[in-house]
Amino acid sequence: MVNVFIYSELSSPTLQDEGRSGLEDDIDEFLGEDGQCCGGGAGDGSWNVDVELIEDGDWETRVTRLVGFLRQRGVPADTKMVILSPDWQPGMPRRTVRVFPED
Image 1 (tube, rainbow, N blue to C red):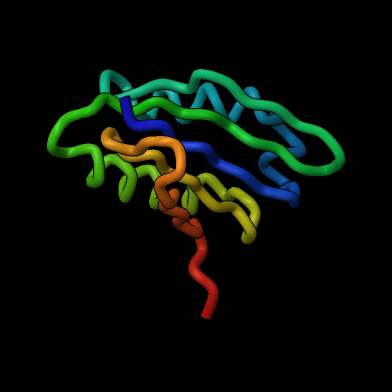
Image 2 (image 1 turned 120 degrees about the horizontal axis):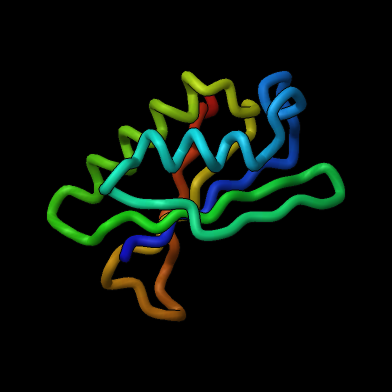
């Protein structure tokens, strides 16, 4: 599996209306057979959603598609994803992707 951890310290109108569980449901529907939400949490104004993507030669395309989905979904501007590739081991660097790149 490819582990993707989505983080934000802000809220958005969409999240305020539906909550984090609504986002998790939408991610599950978007990913279909390609992955699933497997956890999440919230506290002190921040939130996170944990996602597992299937491990195959196309997982990086799925990450790119997930970024586009999160943008369209209206996640907060500070949202980032920390990605642990299939070959990731403790001590190796983690890949971080900002959903809305900084200028």
